[in-house]
Length: 279
Image 1 (tube, rainbow, N blue to C red):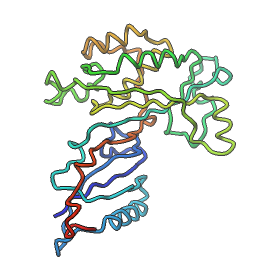
Image 2 (cartoon, rainbow, N blue to C red):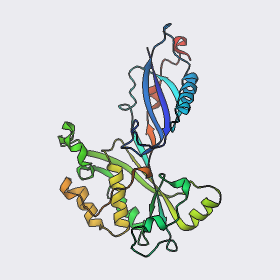
Image 3 (cartoon, rainbow, N blue to C red):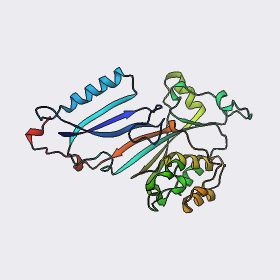
Image 4 (tube, one colour):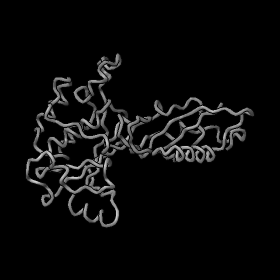
């Protein structure tokens, strides 16, 4: 029996895969491990595993691509050996010349959206959006905090969730950088003339269910003046479901990408000098 680490990417669908927080979330890099055994007790060729899986996924028309397969020790676990995870959230903020001033229910549908970005990016149609307030508010979330306020109530029924330390998590970094559209050709030119794209990277060891989407929702609420920085501070420092400000809108799942699962390379080393395990 041999254990294999399979690294892959996928685009969110109605199904939940692997490390995604919920349906609709994408992954640029994630991993699973599987145990396989052959009759002659020799390992499979890792490139063959990658090719066979990609061919099968393609035939099934599934939006998943295997990136790499590697042989790892039997003690390796794709979840418990992870040192941390980096999430990416993409937003596009309408420039003033695009924002429609009326209060029509169709306001968001009347604005131009590049078809390549459908279910790939969160478009914010609000002229009051202040990226500087967004960035400064993000500093309140960095560090080790009790994020019980940011946990979905669905998971409160979990017995583990009642432990006082369950919701204590550490946010190592939040970086906000200018992004770019995924559109191509003339669509790309038009999209970038009408929207400012921003990439928000959030790094930590682990996250609660819907924590990242709730964090982004809070930062957008501050940037659009729906809530104040004081309100966000209270949500962080008074951990309780009752502290949640209901003026905050949960950011959509399709803007969220699991960007990277981080491992220690030494944990994946598997008898490199043993010819019997060579692939």
